[in-house]
Length: 186
Image (cartoon, rainbow, N blue to C red):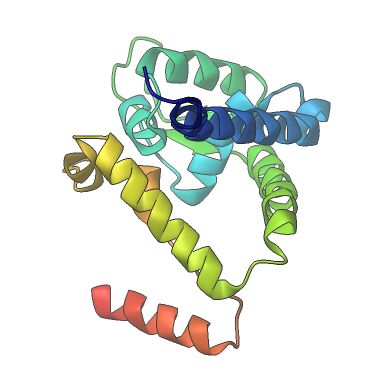
């Protein structure tokens, strides 16, 4: 067993990440409570807003979530009229989900709320510090997850996390650099 400092240090990241996750989910659920859904549902609406027309498998991979749970959530969202699908019959095995106008409005509302929630604690942090934080977090996940590189270079629909990026505010020198790098990658 390590020293007390080591014990506290070793539990910092998991405890911190759990708390951040809890607070974010709570805030997101609060933002969508009037629609009869929770943060567990709205993440799927956001995923379809970002990339509409995904199958259960694609949504699960995109969000890195369980397919069985994805199936349950999509059934609820369809019943509420927030998504629709293109299945030809009730027994169709492969079909795509599409966000409805109502679902898109909820996703946009949630994203605006989330933007405010996530950006407010970062207002006092410089662009450089945000970029350093992003790079540190990517370094942490890449050393924690032995399948990280395989995951990031999946032959399937790219997981959401492969889109991790930081786009600085428009009309700043940093945004011009970031945009030019994105254009070069394409």
